[in-house]
Length: 376
Figure 1 (spheres, rainbow, N blue to C red):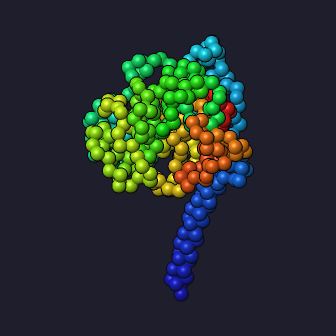
Figure 2: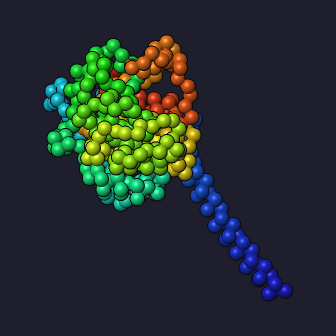
Figure 3: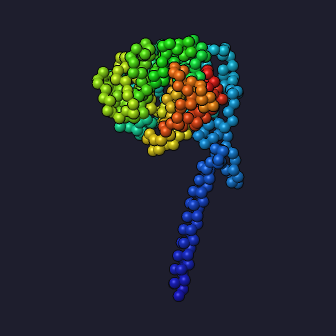
């Protein structure tokens, strides 16, 4: 009888200990869940020593909630002696870090022959990485042999860059000379320059595109510019290999519209944009759905936001022009180079225009970038 009672008491004690352990684990998991939970106002909640909620100063992505056009005191002091118009070294990245502490500047503009060692992209398939593309990229780079800008641009102690968007907001602004004054002028897809120089300038340093967006009429390409591929799918890298080796482009390679069959550039004038900028723009800056790191509905950033992200890492000052769609003006021109109206724009299944606008507005409000056409 006594032995049975002792066994019962022992089992009861063991059960009680197990209950306490499980209870502690459950409580810890619950507390962790609360620490990560976000309220409807995108405020990240944390707890003080007695469990009271304390509103964070950062939103769920990690951006400072209270953005101010005034420079932080330490940066105001650092750049106080710079005259108007003089390039300020490290300005864009310093301000970006002040509003987004997770920002880490080192990220090469283009892929080089060490691409397989870059951990941030090797585990993701296009457009967010290079997984499965090793042989194609290796073949392309063995022909291009160049991974940087020009020696003159690379030697600058301070580099000013502008990304020229295709928006109708650029029309009749006469910004051409101001745009051409930047060290690096980035243009996107097939937006023309010839005939629009007064408003958009005539200088092009980089033209970033993908196969379906590339200029198809050879005479429309500018001289002395780099052709830069933004690879959104594996077919894009295959297409670039055809272009680099001047091979016949197959129209049946899975493109969603007709593509350029030739690009009037020599191999050393062709680059591959670092896919990390697509990844960072999508998931870190804009907050698009991760979708296992694959291209999916609504998780692809526009080329404009990707180019801005690239510039934040590689330029000291960053400006944009021709960005923004004013949906309240349906009769305004959609693009600066054609008569199609704003009302023609349809909801995109690949992009989230509203979220991108929120991201870009943060940068403009905090003076990380300058919007010359005030379209954002």
